[in-house]
Length: 268
Image (tube, rainbow, N blue to C red; front, side):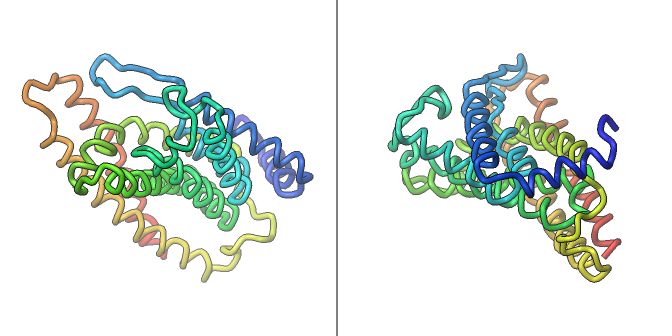
């Protein structure tokens, strides 16, 4: 551990007790980081789909800022971008981006940051590496859900085409970003309660484990289905490197979510 428990507790307590203007500045900072992450594009030699840093900062904002200010940071990102700040993907700006085919993903950013912040704030047992990874993957799922719904509405396409265009190519990169955010979250978050958490009593912990276990089982099944859909949608002649990329990243996420479901349901 790079941080001892006392320091993690102090950081977490400061985040709860900081003045309003400090929290607002942090929210604005994470909006800017998300905008900067949207401009970063890492192209891997075995896949044409770039990896950007956007989702990483969305998820990490929920951990660092909590549910309310994490969601506020993404609302600031959306609002300032709509007003002309060129920090949407590709350096774009304007209300037409929010109302366009990809605007649903930005709405999903708000939902994901709130979900990550809510679970992290509310349950002490959510602050370890495995629950954090599961929470981050759930946050990514919310982003995809909002994105696909708007993609279908704006383009007038069915769910299979929306998944093929707006979800399947991006899952491997987002799995890695979710796991990276989970690692940072587990490093920064205190393991001991501050007194406001809902799982201080055994009944609360069992209820959380049951709900997370069911969510993990559903996530594992959904990832398995999406993996096969992606394999079926790849064009003939796809290189071995790209096939290995999809296989390894999907397998990692499926194994993690299935393992989490087993452990959590057993603990419940």
